Picture 1 (tube, rainbow, N blue to C red):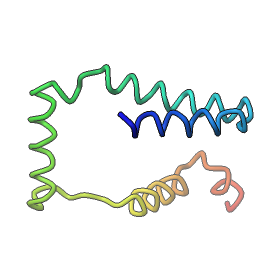
Picture 2: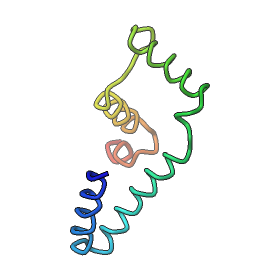
Picture 3: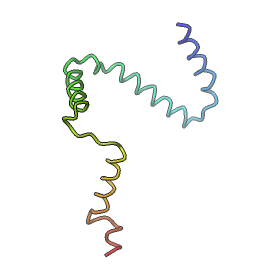
Picture 4: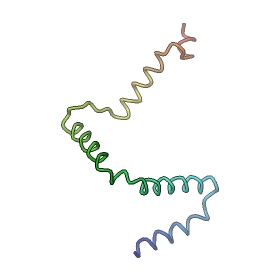
Amino acid sequence: MGTAKSIDKQITHFLPRLSNRQKKTVLTVVKTFAEEAESGMWKDKAFIAEMDRRFAEMESGKVKTYSLEEVEAEARQSYKKRPDNIQNQEAQ
């Protein structure tokens, strides 16, 4: 319990130093954590089983995974190839 009080004191100490925009951002994060905790998705046995199945497929190599960099590169290439892309129109 001492750790929780220490964290609460730290939050209380730093909170007055934040701008309203920063406080809104912190509030959004806190609400998201609270909603996740309330959602109970980690108590849903079907959800857990599906996540376990997908993770096992990924670890075994049964499914292809992509890094963020690979996904971003593919998205950029696809965007450049779009006929309605302004850059493509200017190049023609």
